[in-house]
Image (tube, rainbow, N blue to C red; front, side):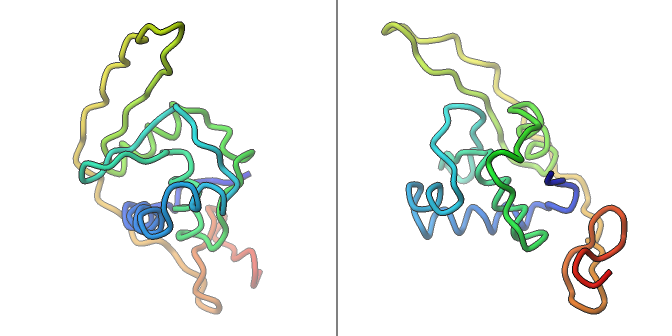
Length: 138
């Protein structure tokens, strides 16, 4: 199971840049995600699938992208984590029977928390997990 404590704002920004470079369809397909109407992240006027972005940001933080089935925290956890990193996150609902669903309240944008430097392994320079012991080097 993936943990996201090492994902920082720069990691999410790197995932956004990769999304913009590849395009939404190729980005989602590459990492095994399908478009979801769930939580969305808005950055510089563009909207992104927040769950897929967080999974790819995990790759930038740890070297391994989180798999779709590992994103078990649900929409609330993804949105809360990204909002904590200073991003504008909102939930969306699909329209049913030709009627618009009531809009979910927009999450307020908060200033990002000051980021602590991510501890890295002195041998292989990968981000260390919460245990402080490198998964590769031991």
